[in-house]
Length: 500
Ligand code: NAP
Image (cartoon, rainbow, N blue to C red; front, side):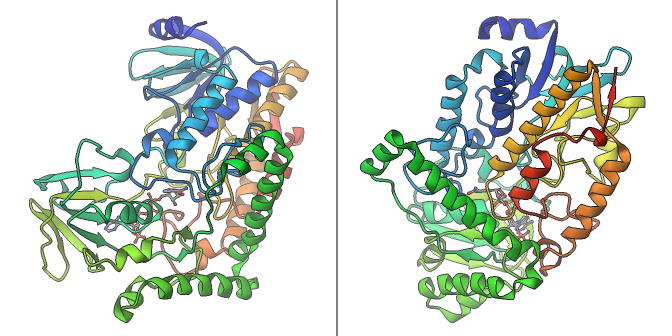
């Protein structure tokens, strides 16, 4: 089916074998591997007008990946043309577009359809998937690839809507607004902020950076790949694989420093020394040094990489405000000390609504079970992919699949391998549905939470978006990616209920 007819048919109920929701790294990977396994009857439903997920949406100045690009790409589609060790966001988006063309995926994608509901009909053994725009799909399987970093999180600060200047979130950058010679407030000091601040500091008149908690920032060891190097990668792909392997082993090697951090005091000290050196080499003012130095274990919040963040803070036109914002007035933020900061633009670098896994998607499983209800306080799955009571439903980057150090693309590929194997086993048995056994899921999550309690994320002395209100960590995987890959390589038939 071509794109036009795919779009047209969205208004009637369309029957397909598989619905994939989202066309980011996850959705595209699922589509590619399904095709390779012989599955061609699938549709990718995408809410936006273009594919690419987080790399389509995040276009803020300085946006780049903080995982080496040769590792932050599909293992089966390496890219010899990456310009830098850490590729700019626009290159990653172009890479995904290229993958969609290479694997002829565009004709499977229906754009500008936001899936709002998926309901399982046990008798027919089919999911009924509905979109906000009025389309309906009936499918035997649903793969949810909507990602955790897809919905911007706006802070709950009084008066946000009263601000009379221009304001926007980093994930929804307003490119029609010139920041040249403007007084700009940036709220937040996470991964997005440390990239935005150095990029805009040289052009704005005044930059006020509002910090609630300082991050640990390590130097970024980066190089621009020369044309010769790219030629070598293109003509001798083994060299690219070697480089990827090097990055992979490096990231895996650091993982135990975070997952069993009390057993690795030397690793922790090493990270802290590097981060402190990064501060000292860029900031001369002892008071400012003090204010940007965290008071929690490195890695508790995501470790950030930058060579230009601290130098930006040391600029004359940049002021770090570490006093808490109490409200926003029409002229700008007001802090706890009562000071008002008059600005023209406010940039919210305040992250994503990560804990809302379903992002408003209404999923109804067996016996009318509502997933949003079940996941409201306890988003649990098995291997981040299947959840009991919801047959033939698969999640990519679901609960406890995030990583503190490595490339999430490795996890996505592992999850997709598991899904493909589930479908293979299902067909081999002549079964119609597959569901993880509740007790298997319960034991698995008990194991995860027990392991997570010993990690730096849970007990490193900070509060981060990794942790839910109840203090549990439903976000991160507590081991190496090697372990995750081993556990997802094949579906263990004893873990699942197959129904004919
Ligand atoms: P983030 O890490 O959640 O940081 C949000 C920042 O906003 C934090 O500094 C937070 O302070 C602050 N904040 C939130 N509400 C606030 C309030 N009411 N007042 C003042 N400050 C407030 O978000 P992010 O920087 O967008 O990054 C999110 C994730 O996206 C990253 O962890 C990473 O996984 C991904 N990311 C990756 C890259 C990359 O290079 N690959 C780049 C950008 C983002 P607290 O620390 O006190 O909560």
